[in-house]
Length: 121
Figure 1 (spheres, one colour):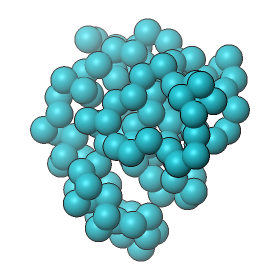
Figure 2 (figure 1 turned 90 degrees about the horizontal axis):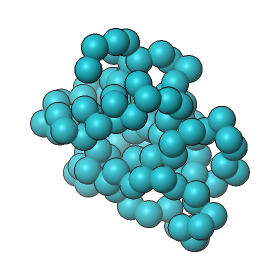
Figure 3 (figure 1 turned 60 degrees about the vertical axis):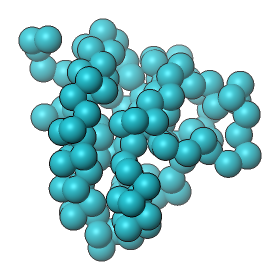
């Protein structure tokens, strides 16, 4: 488990963007499947619903940038209760490129961005 994860190894990307070879392992980190998207078109290697924010937190946040700082704090607290999922994500990131895939419109304020920051700490 030793070794820091390189920031270039963990990317984030909207699920609606086309897959690229540089994506590496694509992991959907949303609790809900993206609307209007087939599994084939999504090109997801793994769907980790359990690493997504709880429904309560997701609904509270509502992708409001004004709540971003508090969302990250609450989400980190939730993630601390999911050590096995984080361990798996870290192992994947140490093994090669990983793209945390999400469906939110806001590319700066979403759970994949927050999760990436947790993984890189």
